[in-house]
Amino acid sequence: MLPKPETSPTTNIRKKKMSQSVKDNITGYIFVSPFFILFSIFGLFPMIFSFYLAFFKWNGLGPMTFAGLDNFRIIFADALFWKSIYNTVMIGLLGTVPQLIVAFLLAYALNSQVVKFRNTFRVAIFMPYVTSIVAVAILFSIVFNNQSFGLVNSIIGLFGYDPIVFTQSEWGAKIAIASMIFWRWIGYNTIIYLAGMQSISNELYEAAKMDGANLFQQLRYITIPVLKPFILFTVFMGTIGSLQVFTEPLIFFNGNLRPEGITVVAYLYRDAFESNFFGTASATAIVLFVLIMIFSLINLLFTNRVGRSKKRGASA
Image (cartoon, rainbow, N blue to C red; front, top):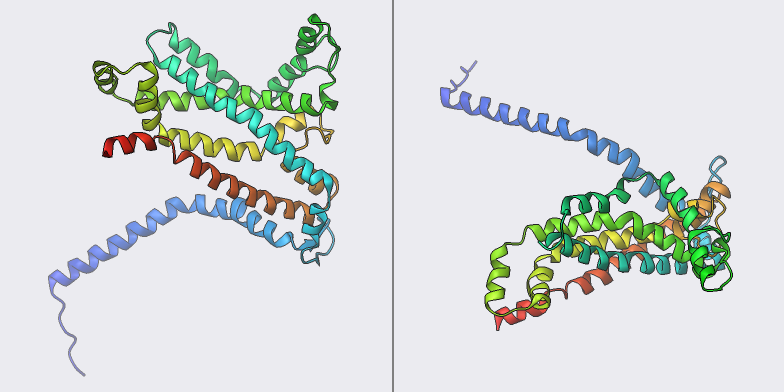
């Protein structure tokens, strides 16, 4: 029997260090594992199952039947599906585009030295974001009430026009839902823009003033290019959020979704949880996913142009 080779003290120390390193790695994985476990159960699995379910007919309780592309054919032949896409895009444009522009201007005003009581205004603007959705529903049920005593109808009545039945009006419903989205999210975007503006050094503005730049030129060549990452973030989040609008139309129609204001997610919800057509609902979810990807790419191409003129000027 051959004698065992003797291990040097240096080798023993390396083994101990490697062992400690492996322990540290295992400890780290254990600490981060709850997130990945919960994400796999409540995030990844429903997404994969939804893609799988789009090719089956299932009422939620009985056996699943393979249907191929029939679920897609059914929703593409449904006029209400195309109506929901049109409503989603129009409500998104009405509620998101003006919101981002106004939020930018509000942040610029709150960042200036001209406005007094800036902290009070900042809190007031952010309040809608933390307000309960129930309170929002009560507020907008008064503002856009179908009766003549509603706030908007009262103003319209002063000019001699008949009251609008907002829940049955093609554009009245869209404007009312878009107003809710505008009111709820404008404070959130204002605070993001304000945080970005406060990170810009005043030396840049002082140097621009010494070079004779006016307020508009400072905004165009300093503020907007520096805020490009913030603008990208808000545009992306606003686009994705506008394509996933659900709570606002559900509240506005008091649970009885109508064609005038039904969105894609509301259409999906109606198919899945009112009609028990989980296959067509999953097919709608896949179409919505593709739409979000397309609109995100369009936004990426558009927002990449922000601040490009300044880079060209700097490189010239």
